[in-house]
Image 1 (cartoon, one colour):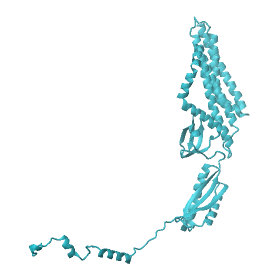
Image 2 (spheres, helix red, strand yellow; image 1 turned 90 degrees about the horizontal axis):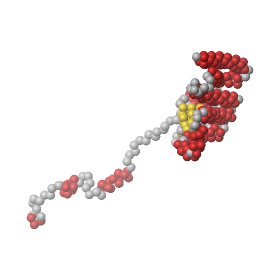
Image 3 (cartoon, helix red, strand yellow; image 1 turned 180 degrees about the vertical axis):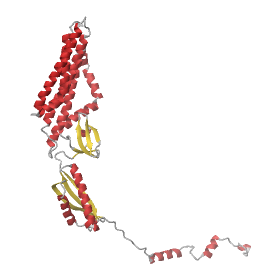
Image 4 (cartoon, helix red, strand yellow; image 1 turned 120 degrees about the vertical axis):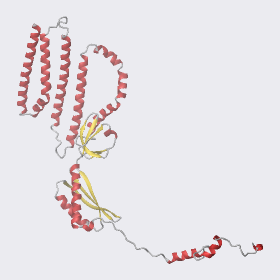
Length: 390
C-alpha cells in the first residue's frame, strides 16, 4: 500500500510539473513570437511533442523513483520501464522531425514564390521539400533502429544478420527496384532543376502546374483542378514540356482564316488598340502577319506575349474574341466564304454525234433494219422451196 501511495503521489507531482513547465514555455514563446517569427513557428510545430515528451519523461522518473528495483517483489517493473523507454524514443523521434521541419521552413521563408521572377525561389523550395521528406525518413529509420536495439538478443543476432547482408541486399534490391528507382529519380529531380514546384508543364498532352514533388511521385495540378500523379521516373525517362524552365514569359499565337478582301493594315491597328486596353499583355511582342494565302483564304497570324501561361491563355482568348467582333462589325466582307461556280449543261459536240453515227453505220444491225435482223433471228420459212434446193 505504501508503494502504491508513493507511486500515485509521484504521478501527481509529475503531472503538476508538466503543466507548470508547459505553461512557462507557452508564455516564453508567446513573448518571443511578438518580436521574432521563428518563435511562433517553433511553438506551433513543437507544442504537442514537447509536452508529450515532458509528460512521458516525468512519469517514467516518477515510476522509477516509486517502485524499488526488486525483481522478486516487482517482476513487472522491467517491462514497464522498457515500455517507457520505447515511448520516449518514439516521442523523441517525433520531436526531432518537427524541429527539422521548423528549421527548413525558416530557411524557405526568405524565398517567396508569389513574385513575378521566382525561378530561384521555386528551385530552392523544391530542393528543401525533398530534403525535408528525406530527413524525416532518416529520423524515423533511426528511431525504429533504436527501439529494436532495446530488445535483448538483437545484439547477438547482429552478427548473423551482417553475415547474410549481401544476399538480403540483393534480394531487397530486386524486390524494390521500382521503388528505389523512384526514390533516386525524386532526388535527381530536386537537385537537377528540370522541374520545380509551381512549374508549368505539359505531360501526356495535359497542361498543369507542379504541385508536389516527393521521393517517389510527382503531383501535377491540371488546369481543370484534376490531379495527375506520375512516378518520379517519368520525368527522368520521358520527354515533357516545361514552360517555366528559365522564365515564365511565354509567346502565343492567334490564327484566322479570312477572305481575300481583308485589310491587314487596319486589322493591325485594331490589334494595337485591343492590346492597349488589357493588362494581360506584357508589352514585349505584338505582331500581325499574313502567313499564307492559298485555296481561297488568307491566313492571318497574331503573336502576343504574357507574363505567364494562364495570362497568355486568357490574352489569346481575349484577342480572338475582340478581333472577331471587329471583323463582324466593321469588315463583314472579310469573313471567310465558300465560293461555288455554277456551270450550265453544255450541248453535246457535233463531233460526238458524228462519231456515234459512224459507229452506228458500221454496225451489223442498225436501227431501222428490223427486217434484216429478222432473217437471222426469226423462224426460217421452208414451204415453197423445192426439196432439191433444200
